[in-house]
Image (cartoon, rainbow, N blue to C red):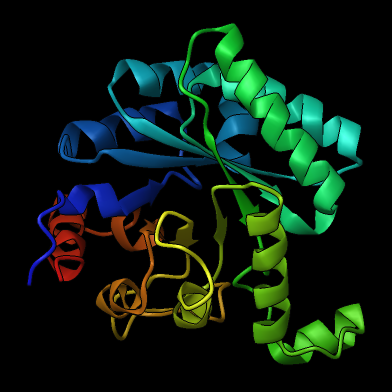
Length: 241
């Protein structure tokens, strides 16, 4: 049976490597875009005002700043971030249970202060750029990436977060232990045969959705395409299952 949800709801377009004018041009070309991801590049170069611009355009925002610090700092950052109107906010799960619980409570309080719906906090597990070899050599961690992702996702779930970010390779195993309401957001989505760029653990869009991904983060495959509107439509068609 086909999923009757609007397929555009499943795709978060990453605005990495773009400036404000690039973003506005992209949204003009593809008004069907519902979700956008604002990461460090765009946020640092354009400032928080870009979030207001996107909200005024009616877009849902994944604020992907990957907060990682001592509990009090993460707490205060999430309190402020929740007031921007972003629906999804990321923080590193390895900040620890105390930080995650404090952040979740602070996000709820921050949103309530300005009469907004509380955002969903997403715990970053292991970035998709990591390989098993670099995981061992750089971090001296001898667990498999799959084991580590599972452990961190359980910490996120038990800390009250609403989801986590993982690669498409781990989605199927996580979906077996996480409730359907727990969002599994997956970057590392590529069109078949395309360049992986700086990501290692990647997958095709249709495969990720079939494995249980809630939403897919797709950037350069759309934004750097010769025909971004066509590519966006193509990915939408792939997530109808």
